[in-house]
Image 1: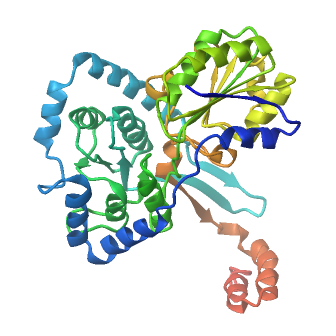
Image 2: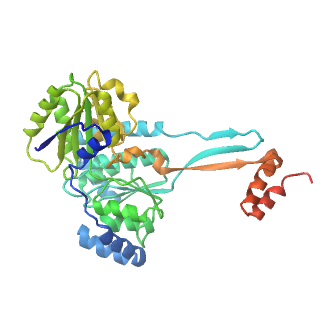
Image 3: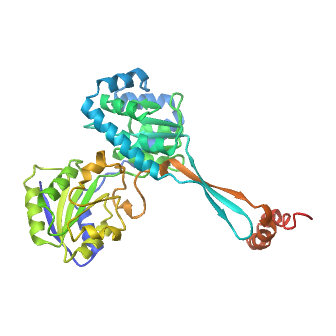
Length: 412
């Protein structure tokens, strides 16, 4: 496996960019996706069926029947089922911890504003097809949406692989659809004769899926745009090079566009990890080892990169956890390999990629819930009218002002 040896160039941002630049630039599929989305939106079921036959190879019913889910679960390897049940329990526990109670704010003029979280009614979880099935993605999406209180949780399962169907059955998905790609995203966003529209679409997928999510956002909620994976390990010299290396090459299994890198101030660790990774078979992922003058500088490089996954390993690196500002998920200590988070740790593995951890978070109940305010003015009308009406008049909204002023003296 090819490894780039990089040295801190004096600027955290440019060093981080040098690491990210190791991955090939993405290809634009905007035009193709735009045509597919527009076709499904305007022609509905007919267009969807044409695309499903063309891209998914499906000519029969699109919705998976319950007996198929039951059979897949019955035939699932018991060891895999036991692992999925651990993952489901842990992801549910962490997801439920993110739920918020109603917040009641009593303000000085006498009014009350209640902040209430309300789940969406219907959500779709996209599960990637491709080379391998990803039942863990079913767990991360369906269990989290269920914990959020979503009424109906449906799964988009291109290929309808048996282990995916079994995971859907274990997680309690309401519907499973054997289709994928931009046409499936469009169908869930706008609805067709057979596919009811949803309120939120979440989950990773191909370039076409992510571009489709971008194009339909605003008409439907989305969790974010999932690109190629990445992991950065910030480690001090006492970190075990064998463990650091296996965590990096493990993440490299995600393939093209993936970036894996060690950031360290220890030259011996830097060289040892580079040698171990170089001995690995050729990979489509990009790997780097970055030598920095000290770990505080290393943390600045990490924050500039804003990794999807960050590992802090070693006595010098682990205490920096409270100073981390930009990472999708942080794994602390020699035993906390990123792979645990991909499956059974309880944290969600659907995380911001491509540096998006600077401004957004991983999948949680928040993507499936909305906050709405409930306002009771009651005896505060007089004071608020005197404060609010002049503002409305200054903006030229005289009827807004009148609506407040008419309540300025409730007994008059």
